[in-house]
Length: 109
Image 1 (cartoon, rainbow, N blue to C red):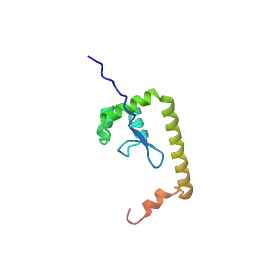
Image 2: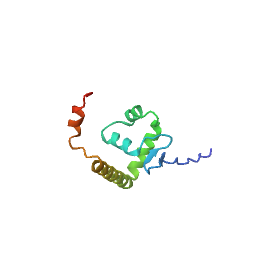
Image 3: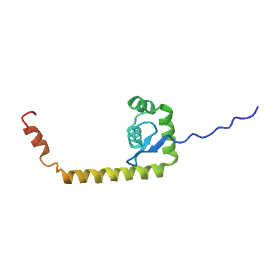
Image 4: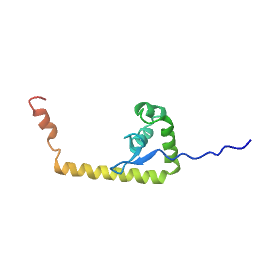
């Protein structure tokens, strides 16, 4: 009996138009899955929250994250910097000062 050749499967991640890593066939970003796992959610609970991502893909992605921890951490740190810069730009263009008071003062509030 000959042993069957086992071919490795590619990590089910791709870059979207914005450059984010997302699960192939979905719009679920890697950041979201990692944040849920770090919060203590099990892969099964994450699958329940994001049913478009198969349980097998979640396990494959987390395996990749464990094996390439430095690369994933660098990617996540870069994404956090991008989000911070984007937030700063938005707050510069649209200062949030007094926004809550303005919203509460609206007649339909």
